[in-house]
Amino acid sequence: MSAYMPRSVKMSPSALAGIKSVVAEQFCSRKFLKSLTELCRRGYSVTAGQAAAAAEEESGVSAAGFSGPLDHYNGLIRAGSLRQDEHQGAVLQKLDELHRALRGYTNRPTSIFSRFFSKPKPPKGCYIYGDVGTGKTMVMDMFYSYVETERKKRVHFHGFMLDVHKRIHRLKQSMPKRKAGKMAKSYDPIAPVAEEISEEACLLCFDEFQVTDIADAMILKQLFENLFLKGVVVVATSNRPPEDLYKNGLQRVNFVPFIAVLQKHCQTLRLDSGIDYRKQNRPSAGKLYFLSSEPDAEATLDKMFDELAFKQNDITRPRVLNVHNRKVRLNKACGTIADCTFEELCDRPLGASDYLEISRLFDTVFIRNIPLLTLNKKTQARRLITLVDALYEHKVRVVILAERPLEEIFVHDGDHSHDESHILMDDLGLKREEASSLSIFSGEEERFAFQRTVSRLTEMQTEDYWLEGDRSLKAKV
Image 1 (cartoon, rainbow, N blue to C red):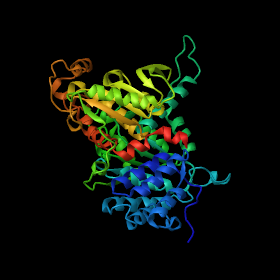
Image 2: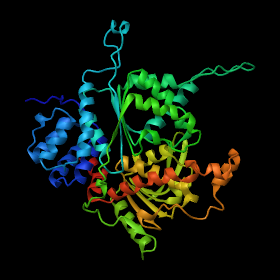
Image 3: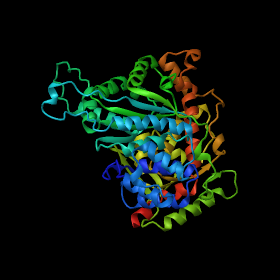
Image 4: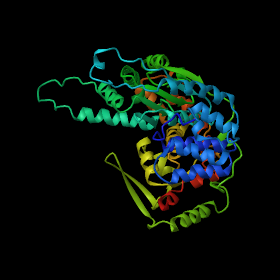
């Protein structure tokens, strides 16, 4: 039986990495991992056929036998490369149905005459939520790799919203300047931005769908209404159910209608096996997380940096990054190695775009002097969460020096007498009692998201992650 999926269908690096990661988490053999890693190193993208061939080499499961993501998943289980997880299987059943429904689907007119007839109704997407490390990204990426269209995008939700805001800014800048003495015409760029995106993709897959920014929250309903109107199908993963998105956020009453829009166009699927596969016993890359109380911890990090820098074709020097015409200075870097302090990365007003640029330029980042993060430092905690998300998504390696063990970094207590939030409450005219329930003041969103940060930093200390993140090996190949 020949392969149902064309060999030309591409599997993105993030898709392959997602499948490989959870395969590793569920006791995949090292030979199979090596095959996938080698495929990653041969180029920017890997065909789905090549990925299946790696599985075939190890397990004897014929690549020609995979008709879709569920078949692929079951084949890996039969081969002993994955462990049976009924929760993952149930979600993949729904994704497999969507995969079949998307065959031949397009949100573009197929001919000049099709413009005069009703458009084909798009299939309903999927919103997959559950605890950290349960395999949500893996099942979505496995689905994504089998969808038979080039007009598809798989992005981290942070990166997607940054792109949306850049498009909005560009369209506003292109408007004619207001003439002196005349009122400027009102202009709403959301619909044109949605149309641009819909022309580029009929399928959008979002990893880590979360809403913490009021600027994002206020435009999501209109943006996604227009995307759905243009026939875009959405698949997303999240740690929160739809009804908990932007929970206790500022002006949430204006955000709530978006939830109904999302639920109308996406079926909600829960993936909660109760297992964080990232925390399963896996070979360590060595000691990468140090406590400042340990003797000679600083000296050990200095030595590690020197050893890594020695292999770089560069000198140790400050680096200045250009991010959207802003200068971001890092005091110590060498080639693809950056040696930073928590103060440099999280005490300054940096955001997702800055961290994405760091992830693009460096394959190893030292983060020194992470303090105990109480509610007084929830802004810094939020930046650390965003930083780790960006580093993890781009397989950047980390070495950490912190005041407390990983599980104890963020705590919900501390002295609030000089909390900067009190100033903001006063500026907004809010009483302390009514403001205490808002997530911007309570730290609830940070506590929730930090579970994902702990899970990811745990995986980032494994041997497989460390080896996969070495870009110098890929460069040699």
